Image (cartoon, rainbow, N blue to C red; front, side, top):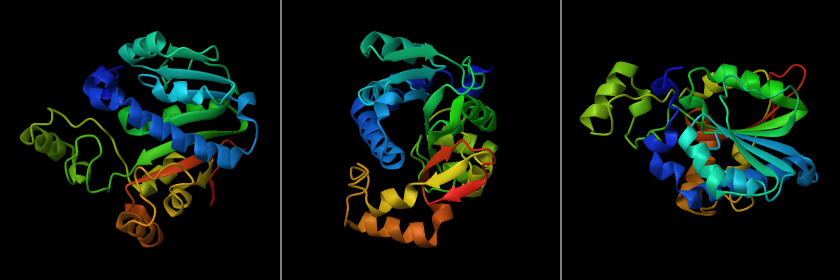
Length: 259
């Protein structure tokens, strides 16, 4: 597999993101709040796979709450860092390719796949693998950025992800932010097609309405102007919202949605 296409060294490409443990722990707080709200059961009985675990901070935090946690990533440097620095009896890290999970069927109750889809060559294939390793009724915590957000989240350049690929490469070079734009963000409509094999439980509006409840007030202070604008966008411009948090439930048929 072409490492450039796969971004197999994410921790080297984006060290500030990979090693910002306070940011990653805040994201883990939101993940846990959403999962608790949905599952309403003893998490210590559940097995969790953090696919795209990078340097391990999120998996380490979640291991305080779940029975067994495996952090998996294709980034060898990040996996080595996680293995050396985060230790718990119920936590393991492994060098695993999400395109071809070396894991038997129906093993996990929960899979985390957050802000990863744009970094892999074939997101549909990875989601197929996620569905395979989930037990019936199991869920994937899926966080995804929208291609149509104004500020591209990786390079912080306006409208970068809107452009055709050759123009985005040129834009990135002219801005001095790199040689090639490798992320493959897609629109809301394409995301819905991507996850159609699952029952989609959309937590985005719930989190926007009650950010404190879901430990997301570090991004969206309740009662602020930003909070009010976000609620307006959820209601009137959902397809342009910057990103989404969905729980993808493994069912027989998929292709559904719940609020």
